[in-house]
Image 1: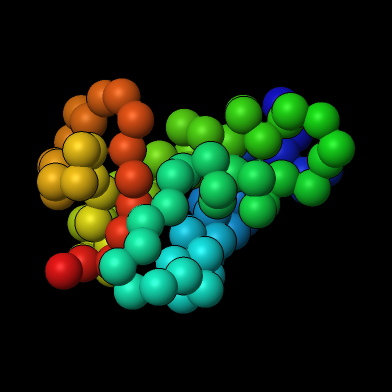
Image 2: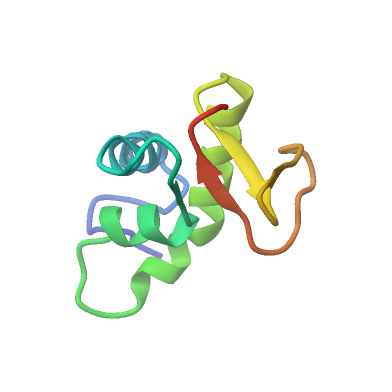
Length: 96
């Protein structure tokens, strides 16, 4: 599964690109706004098809790493949740 022609979706380069995309997307939004992991997946994927979907789980993991570092919060229903074992739809925002 190639993410952008440069390697696997789990590659170190892709992990870094997803983390950077999350932070950049949040920087471009209001401080109170949040993003979906799919926003980062779409930002990183360069193809014209639905291949960004293969980056959804890596994007969620990237958000988890950023949350553990204190750079973002992961929320469900507007409330912060633990990064461990979170299931279902999530949003990513700057810490409050």
